[in-house]
Image (cartoon, rainbow, N blue to C red; front, side, top):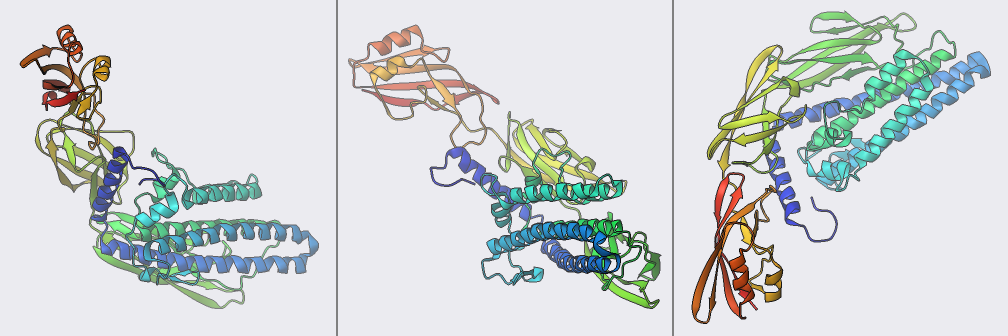
Length: 518
């Protein structure tokens, strides 16, 4: 999209058009069921944020208990915990404000998807709005909130790592939860994470970041607590939480979800009961396998059972939803919805829910080659007509047909000839004397910048009632043409015709051009 004031040049207009076309094409691949699934994921994440935050607040109370029971030697650890808590609140609240801003940008300031400082996912109307996400998180000139967020996340991660020293387990946890690299991608983290993402999925991504940050805080608080030397801390409240990154599964695929107790001692004796099974928690967590065999919405429900500090059995219920969808492919021509003969046509190809390394591409009428390790490809059609891109993918060890997309193959537009870019209808004799010959270029509204070379042309002038024609077998005026032009008496009419040019798809005849010489 164009920036602030000023005239939008043809190339910028073309970029705008491509963005709209790509957005429309991607929209076709995001069904209402998937958007609703993301809304359910967001709802679960909001609950997990509240649960984890409450657990961390309860842990903070235990530092006061430690000071009461162990004296001032516990105070430095409490102060570090309070500093950590303050840093965490700053980042979590910043992300909350971004979510609200994105929703308001999509729905309007009176969005029913916002209630105070809380998000109501089911009431968001512009779930599939990509423009609001782009404007808020990426911005026009890489000045969106996503870049400020990335900086805050890196600073927060650096702060936490300074508190854990050489504790390899905590370093691994922090590096795992706060990983902002995009291995195999040429885009920055902000674009890789938010570009072309529907509003509801971007809000869910931001909520997942909040959950990860709170989980990091929980690990740090537990670490600081253990440094006091207190062997046992009483937790005043325990809730079951769910981490379900696979809210949507492609048919035939499989995934996992984690159910765990927030702010709980890792040595607690507890079991997760679901689907007629009882599975013991390890380090406070249990991994639940998800099946992708049944198309549509699926629900997993159960409870975590544990023994509290006075020996009584306690239960905390949990449930979460995920949706299994048919696999879909997105084949997006980067320039336009056609392929041009003799041109390297860039396209993006991806399959929802499948890593790019497991995607295989083939093409009829031409060749296709991958560019780097991302989903970008170059298509070179062989002839005019139609070209079909077919996509398959390896899912659970089996090669599955993902479908195909058909595109038109056209010749490139006819180039435009001129006397060294003099595009008007008149030319002065002094201008004409300084020009060496005829040049040609692609039309201004064509999205490819191609080399065009004039190979020959003829000129015709009328002088003293006689018409004279002279040809040149090169782009420059021949000696005879130059002599004729130098002797022109103005005003007169100059016709340039029979112009031939070399283009990527062969020699082309260009339209004649006429100038009034003054």
